[in-house]
Length: 84
Image (cartoon, rainbow, N blue to C red; front, side, top):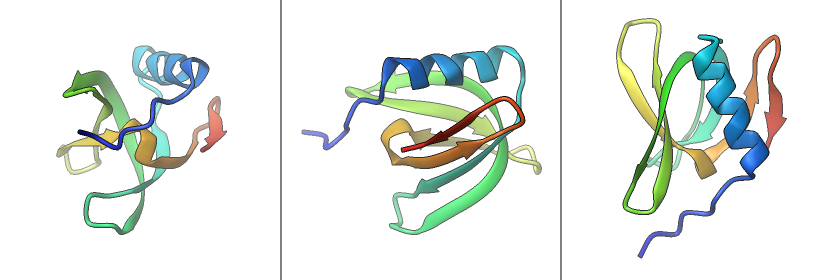
C-alpha cells in the first residue's frame, strides 16, 4: 500500500496549465533518495500509476524525470507560485 497523499485539485489544474503553456517550472521536491532537489524543468505530462500521481518533466540535458506530486514542496515560475 502506498503512502501517497493526494494534492489539491486546484494545484493539479495549475500543473495542467503549465503543461499546456509549456511553462518552465522551478521545482523543489524530496526524491526517492530522501534528498531535497531544486531544478528548473519543463513539465510534459501528468501520469497516474498504482494510485500515485506524477508530474513528468524534462531537464535542460533532455532527460525525463517523474516526480510524485505529493513530494513537491515548492514550485515557482513567472505565472505559477505554490508551496506544499
